[in-house]
Amino acid sequence: MRGEPSCPKCGGRVRAPGLFADTWQCDLHGAVHPLQPVVPPSVEALGVVVHRSHVPVWMPWPLPVGWLFTGVACAGDDRSGGRATAVACSGPGPLGGPGELILVAEELGVGLGARYAGMDGPDPGPYLDMNKPPGAKLLAAGRPTPLWHVAAAPEDRAVFVGEARGLWLWAVLWPEQTSLLMYDELVLTDLRDAGAEVDLLPCGALSPRILQV
Image (cartoon, rainbow, N blue to C red; front, side):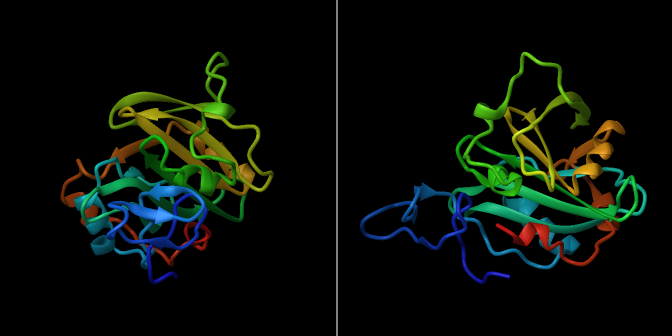
């Protein structure tokens, strides 16, 4: 696990605001919202991200049978608040073996979703053809939300992307067969709107997938 912020687009080191710039700076990408160090999953760690986030913190709720919350990441700082969030869940895959799901909510240009998707970013627009039918539909904060399958994603994962609450919503699943979960009418809750039931969230070991950025 990293102990200092990094670039959400490339994972490189970033410089804190100072005399010559009032934003975090990456040598490759210029001004960025810094990706904060990932900490082990717990209700308390999740609460910190939820409290400071300006974007949804999406969680399948209820979780699929046997699945656990296994990590959370956030891009942004104390001044700007969270501008992108990533929530990891892990459990038995629909066809057997372990499955992983990362849900990313982000503002335009942050680039965190594209990193987890294994694609050039920062935004999914070049990969989307919204003239085609969506690849999956789910409920996000009570609203029917179409997601389009991104065929250009690496073969080891499945990537779906759409919009919810006016922001990008990415769903990245490993292995690719875990994408069958997307056809089970998943219900996503924005944990900023959740109540005391969050205290009952089952937590597992930290997902290695959320550390790969």
